[in-house]
Image (cartoon, rainbow, N blue to C red; front, side, top):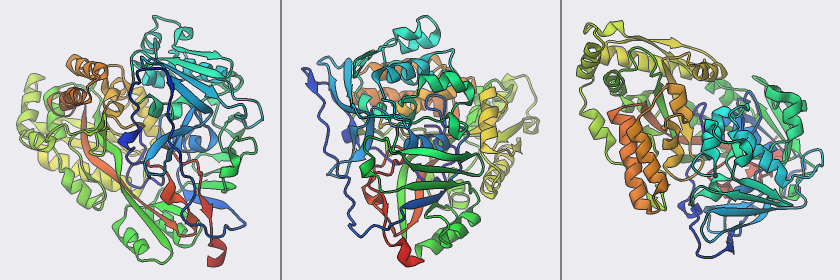
Length: 568
């Protein structure tokens, strides 16, 4: 998942357990679904008022299939529900759980999944959620003429004919999905070990055809244009102000939700968020400032949840730029700053330096994924020599100051200003190149990147499923980030294709590691610098978070308030 900001995400994501990976059976059987324990460990008396308030930046739109960032996918977790959900089982590990689908079967060859939808799955207005809704939504996702075109590659190589539809050689109706009464049937290109995990991706949730046709590109930008099928409905929505969600009376599993109302307040600066939390204006907050974090850790009745994440932050290069089109100049920039210095001075020790793209918390086929010592290889590079060689190849003088580039920021907060100033100073000191900050709001940054109006921009990715492909597929030619960067490498594409087709997980990991070396070292598309971690605080009257899954966005099952009234 594309990330807006990783340092202080309120609802940060961490690693999904490798036990989620679903193997191929020898005969057609119903998929075994682990029992899920949703009972909170703390059975304290629940408050009469069940409301939560967070500091979180509302996204620009709520529209499954179209949305592309965690600030948009977060609210969708409340408003929409897909075929399956993610929850912790009784062993405390993440596992697939029934959502709109009450059961599913997998064919003996692993190519066909048949999901049986529950009869009482409803949209917020009471209409039934149907298999046809999923057929329409998935076809819309891969349709190159739809508003979802930038996300359509999500199903490429997984669902039959998805890639050909994206390329325009087949019609969207030929996608490997169909409805048969209350059954939604999916045909895959090849067996996929993580397909059930894949099904709780935000962009695979259903949307209503009548709302898409009525509102078009404006769907999901106002309360009136949002029609969900999840546990909550949106009752107030104003970008850069707040979002409000209230419990839906039509949700099939509404009795498992104690929280009646959720409010997002748009707060991005650390100090205002800290003040709002300590004054009990908000109930949960994510912070990175070391002094503020230290203060909260010493406060009574405050819970601190710190986790190593499944996310990475990196610089992405616009390879259409005269200088950045040169491989050696990109290599120089990728080794032209201190990652450790960034973690120590800007991230305040939260997170760890990143030299490759796939976080160390990610597995491949149930085995720990280790692509090798990228740090040592990158550190051996002579950045200044590479820069001179690149300029020579372009027929220019060796003067590094002629390279003048912009970094488009993902916000205008003090933290963002400090971050970009750090990198500007590093590149000037180590390479002599001139970098300027293009300080813009994160929504404007995404628009600029989408239009190619940038030279260097921040990229980030959270794990949607526990496999290196989740990260590395984004740089296949025409893939999510590759398209925005104008990047293409045939050797990289071939290695990723080999990994996709490999049924031996260890061999697949080897192909992924070779491919990752290309985009991080040999022909860099990115310069990774941080593997994230979350540092989240909540008042101890918020109960049930200890039972929540690590992957996916919150839907508030098992969360409740107990004791808030006594603290007033």
